[in-house]
Image 1 (cartoon, rainbow, N blue to C red):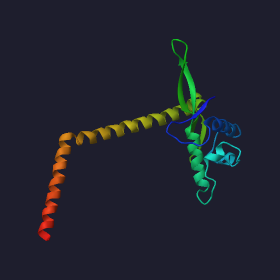
Image 2: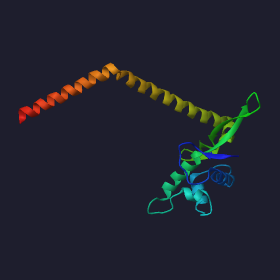
Image 3: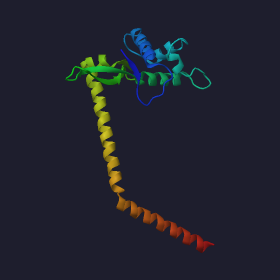
Image 4: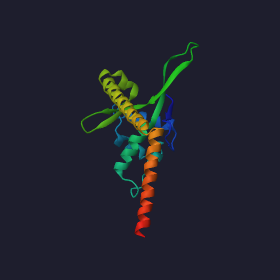
Amino acid sequence: MIYHWRPGGSHEADAQDVGMELEIVAENHNLKIHAADVVEYAKDKETALHDLFEWDNKKAGYEYRLTQARHVVRHVMVRVEVGKTPDNQPIEVSIRKYETVRESETQNVYMDTLEVLANEDLKIKILGRVRSKIESAASKMKDYNSIIDYFSEERQKTLFDMVEGMKEEEHKLKEITV
């Protein structure tokens, strides 16, 4: 499997090395990754994961390292072949290697995304979460478009005129009080 970092992120370790180490963490914990397991594994200075954490306790404590672990796991990506072109070239998509799964009321774990999607119950939960994010984004887009419409060029001119008028009134008041 070929690993890479999610676009837009900045990581100081090789994604392939990190991905392989996360596989080891998962294999050692029933194919589930807890942030604490990643931090524990990364304590070994010889690992690729080690350099992705702040180990100076004056700068960061254990809870911060858990946050760093979650960030690393969420940013490791893989390419998955989903078909072939008419000339038999592979069609690939890039997905997160590990998906967040609710383990209990207070605990999330990360599991291999392909394994999650193969499990009908987990797939329904994950796709529901994706649908919810899409609906939220669509709602935000609608709200922003409403704002853009509200502040159309004509209304912007009106608002500009109002602000200029307020500035003139403020200037006149200053002249009167001086």
